[in-house]
Each structure stands twice: as C-alpha cells, then as structure tokens.
Image (cartoon, rainbow, N blue to C red; front, side):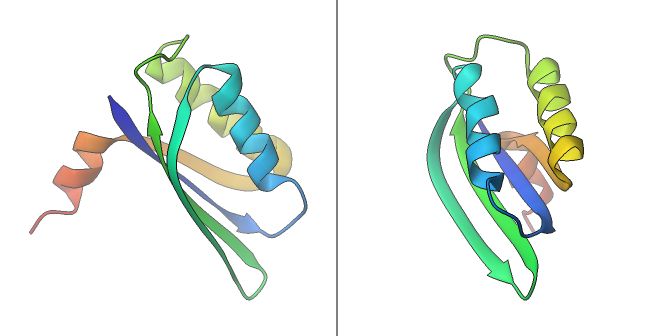
Length: 89
C-alpha cells in the first residue's frame, strides 16, 4: 500500500530530516519526493510505501501530526487510493 505525505510550513533547518526519521523509524520507505520553497514557506510531497510499516496507519498519522506540531509545520498523510479518488474528475 502507498500513501501521500504532505508537509507545509515556515522554512527552517531539518524539516526533511525530521519527517524522514519518523518514516524510517516505522519502516516506511520513501519512493519519491518533491520539495520547494515558496517565498518563506517550505512545501513537500512524498510518495511512500507502507508495505513493511511496523505500526498501524492511524498510529503513523498520529506520530506525523505530533512531529509537525513539534517542528512547527503541518504534516498530513493520505492513503494513495483516497488521494487519487479526491483528485479525479
């Protein structure tokens, strides 16, 4: 199963490292990543593989949101099928 992780917030050192650490600690593999800075705002989208995840999806969701609060960014995760369904016309 795959998922989309989005990160948005004021740019600062270590955002990618901290988000990647949460994913790696829970056996979530990053398949693709796109990030950019829009003026002072950091934006990132990741495609991740949840096949070997060591925790439940809801627990990963909670840990990412908690990390986002800690570092001052918004982190969201959606299952790929939900993301695709929301973006089909």
